[in-house]
Image (cartoon, rainbow, N blue to C red; front, side):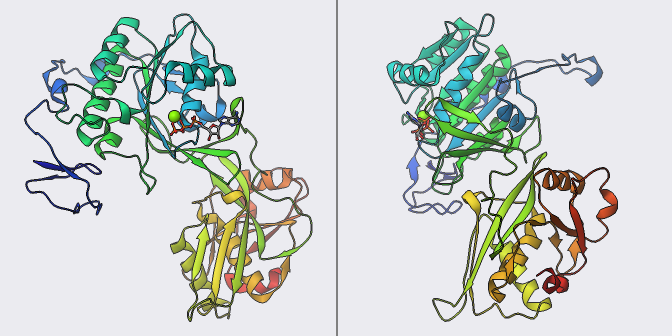
Length: 445
Ligand SMILES: Nc1ncnc2c1ncn2[C@@H]1O[C@H](COP(=O)(O)OP(=O)(O)OP(=O)(O)O)[C@@H](O)[C@H]1O
Ligand SMILES: [Mg+2]
């Protein structure tokens, strides 16, 4: 058989390009007859039981002592669960994993398997970030069978495998670490072991150039949680996101600062993503986005200019291009401006990416401001989602967002119609104005 090393698709014949993931030169020969991943699971003979007879402890979560990580995980780690952390090279995956080593204590053994770095290199980093414990065990082993033996012997509560792409099993058919077979087999056995011996396991993973976890898609199904570590700007800000979480929501983000002492959490990021300028400016508008359970202010900047080629193009960092195209179409239709022959650039301060559609109104105002060359005061905050017929739709969590805007000392907040009634209590003197349709945009200047 032949198999794609990128997505795991099997073929009977050799071919140059994978039909599924469209990668070139990624199909290798492999032997399908040797140990199939998952076969051990089938051998296990567990008795079916009625749901009510199964007993679980009430409080199975434990804190990582880093509140931003707890937030992303949905309240902390769970014994017996498996987590994959992916991210670009050098982003700080090993640093984060090693920092968790501070959890090590009596009755909570922490094992760190480093297939990428030597014990000495890991020790040097641990020294720099201040992780030091007798209950933390470092190992350079990268053979799965040896790792499993050591885990069974030490009985840890927490295991880090750095990285899953450097571990190989002697039983798997392919001998190259990081191949589909190896990654599937190793992660399957390790996740299974974590459930059997009741420890938390973190598998550090590499990512592909498209930014997804390298290796087979099945890896994402095998584990309970997938975390992505990403850079926000060229500086030291790092954002931790979940793309899958069996034990919590997936829209929470954790924000960190990378320092020489490791990752420092930023617990109050509300005003981190605005430049804090007082005066009015053209094409720069503040919006309140909601990431997970936390409102955050972001500054959306727009530049509308003459096209570099015969027709206008859209360049957006931070907001999805499809969303931007939609907003441009709405503005053209209802606000009497012609944007099809213009280049439109959108960027968010510090390069943060937002998914919340409540940034629509602010983005539209930024484009309008740049197109018309009209300045807009930075003491205003705009919140609202735009519908296809140009109406400004009501949004979730309006009260929480407004309170945050008021707390930070802004003067005016423009919100969708009928939102005022949802806001109770003090808003620190914030003047709240309502907008019903994007047609009213010219009245905002
Ligand atoms: N002395 C230092 N001061 C500040 N930051 C540092 C220092 N040393 C290393 N770093 C930061 O740590 C990062 C490397 O972190 P780490 O090795 O944890 O990344 P990684 O994601 O595990 O990388 P890889 O994929 O290569 O294993 C560097 O990119 C740098 O930002
Ligand atoms: Mg590393």
